[in-house]
Length: 154
Length: 167
Image (cartoon, chains in turn yellow, orange):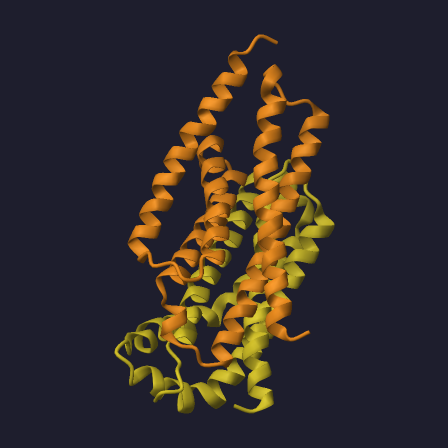
């Protein structure tokens, strides 16, 4: 693995975790009656940017290295479903996470006052952030399983 | 300092903050509940503990991913990633995160939530330290569930004892 690919993998993981923490913080901030709009904007911005960064670095690693170097190793193990099911699922969920976080970013930045006054909008934003965090945790667990299946033996 | 040492220090700090703040939050909550109400000052003190718990959790998660990255880069494979101890630790952390969310959004009873949080932090500590644990995943998880139930009743016992004391 080249230094560039190594960095792509490490940043994919780190930025994904930063995005998850930011979106989880966003949903926690939305609990109160009086909202801290400044921090809502910061968390939604950080969440979106980090997802985007994780998307680009993970995408590069996947497109240039995973298919030819990692996938055959996993398929040769006794648990090929880690690629055929988990990786395939992860790959598809991963595609739309930056878009979901972009929706959250747009809502927070364009309708800050409405979030406070409109209960339904606030509820929808909480649900959206819940969805992002839940999907994020699911693909994180899938990522851990994928990393755990890679050995030098094959 | 190498990466492993740096990550290990971070993991220990995260665990210490989480376990310590959870323990003291519970002790102070019991102490503050003596008069049947939590005044604004007491509320502020508890709030600080909850912030430290959150900080500990974030440090624990990031340093945990640091370990995962090192394991992946060193090709440690299923022996480490799919070990009973590690899978149990991941389960406990996911439960801890879920409980933290559920408490904040009042989706579960606060008393149940605090028993889950309390036991989860200690479980994460024990699983982190007990590296050669011979216990299987089901045994660890079953013990975890039993401990949550026991802790719930122990905390309930102390709450009742404190509230029944003359003011």
